[in-house]
Image (tube, rainbow, N blue to C red; front, top):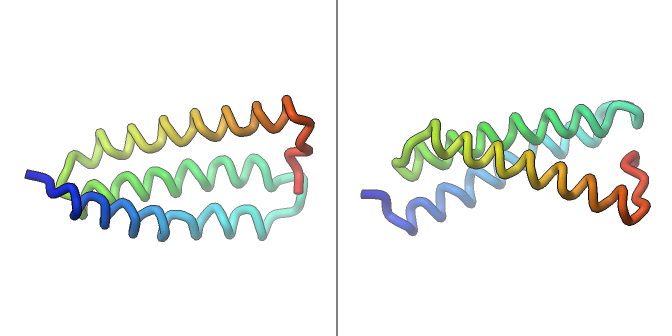
Length: 92
């Protein structure tokens, strides 16, 4: 049985580690490529996060990874859409 505390600790560690890839993706490419590179990097980081947290927490890696990636992609699209509606540039 999966421990809620173990799952919470695994998620916290995985999300912290998974934040490194998007941070690098937004800092390194030229301005014109930051948005698509960051989107792909975030999806990769989310896949890593889902896999690692499921492994540590003892749950299904496939289900956890799919859930995290799909939820994250939807959140990315919603956030980008909100930014467009509010007049945010999209390019840093």
